[in-house]
Figure 1 (cartoon, rainbow, N blue to C red):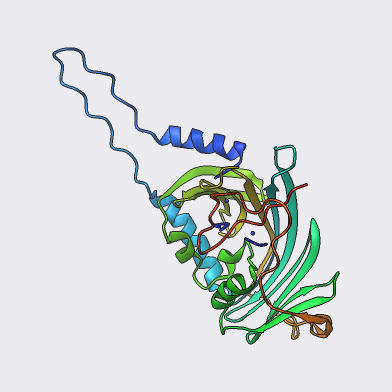
Figure 2 (tube, rainbow, N blue to C red):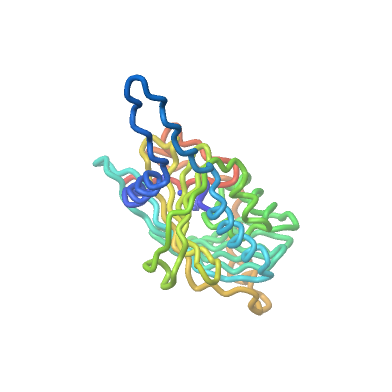
Length: 293
């Protein structure tokens, strides 16, 4: 999920409130202090850090995604960046994602900034900027997982929904998982009934909404504990289509191929503040770049 800089959950105030309420509800009642001469009453044992129901829901969703040979979906990501006045501003991107296991991926991303297109056909990656008509091309590893890692390390390309298209989504969640608990159900997200689950690693707390019937994620929200500005991130997922026919030519672009070539490398850092000090991203995923206006 959104664990973890380029195009990408501690939670927003509303999430913080809901988690606080849920945590409070899960706390065992404390026995009153024993009166002088009385034997203290033993309190109820604390619930497990990894609640079985929460793990079951996360595993079911991950299994549904991992079993899909092809899929497409829409990811709308809203993330905060610091402003000159102090309080954060919100930026939004929308990605139309098409995937075919084990080695094909297309991501078309318009948003609050220049649009971008990403094509991986099993052999080559193209990162294309339509407005500038520039393309970066490189040879690619033979799997989606390896290509996503290589694209990040070589060119700082990251997608916040990466955990949904890898071969084993639950493995990415389980790595370093410290806390997971069930919050309850929602009727207000994604046009369906969803189960809400919260889980935490050492530097991020995430809340996810997962469809009760179809086991597909509909929303993810997070905050990073090592980000001193506590910027907040949200991703809404819709238009899920699994195991669909994929037309030939989906994972390449004649226009991108004909564009002016530039190196497949990390972009120059933008002017102004970069990622807040202390907001070191985890290896699996990273937060989006900050912007200042």
